[in-house]
Length: 166
Ligand code: NI
Image (cartoon, rainbow, N blue to C red; front, top):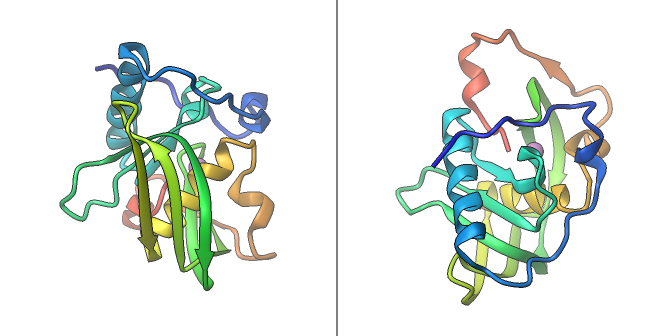
């Protein structure tokens, strides 16, 4: 596994649409492993492949609930329910947090890291992370939907900085 460079705000790749993965092979699993390591090194709860410069529909999420990180290939939202107003950050926007409205519950379909079809239902933080990362695959960023006037800039060493970077 290797830590990859995280693309930051202003990098035009973040606005591009990622491509569907046709075959889930060792190369894809290696990218997913690298995404996991990169996300953990940056204390993130989620990361999309485009954030490490790869335009493939790949997402890794870890909400630190004791379960293994989710590794998703070609995730698609099939159902969403309710709304939550939450504070959100992004690994591509260091030290910035803003309020956004996300679904309270989300159901997605995807392939796992071995190419098997899976359905995942997430609530609260998991629903937020799924919505955030799937947006990345279409070049959408949390700053596009943030509630006006809610952007906060934290000092790099602020403890609160450890929260909700996706
Ligand atoms: Ni993000």
